[in-house]
Length: 120
Image (cartoon, rainbow, N blue to C red; front, side, top):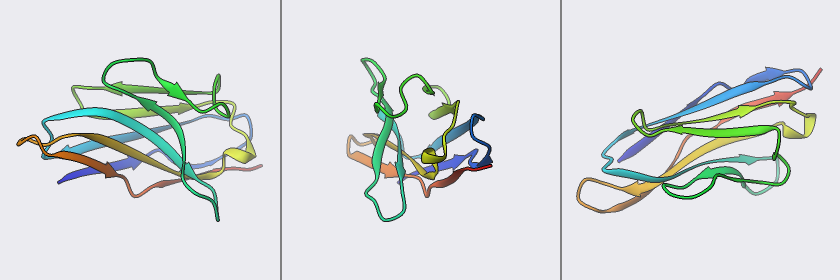
């Protein structure tokens, strides 16, 4: 079982910045992809950014140039640096991770989400 814990959400004024963190723990052999999603009220969860084990970081068009995702493979942690935040970025942000457990079994885990509110 793999647990993901997010932190760093909160209330920020338009134009401000926040940094989200996501730490993975549990029965992990290898994490392949880590990602951040967000969900607006009444909408489906949408991808914000993802980092594969190999390859470029993928960003949604709505956050390109404003958000930066990074990953610390040693700490099994991902980060989402959000800058120039807009009111329309207000959502619950979820992290996810996919990989393999100690016996090769695949896993995909989700955090419980952290609220980001952009408002003056």
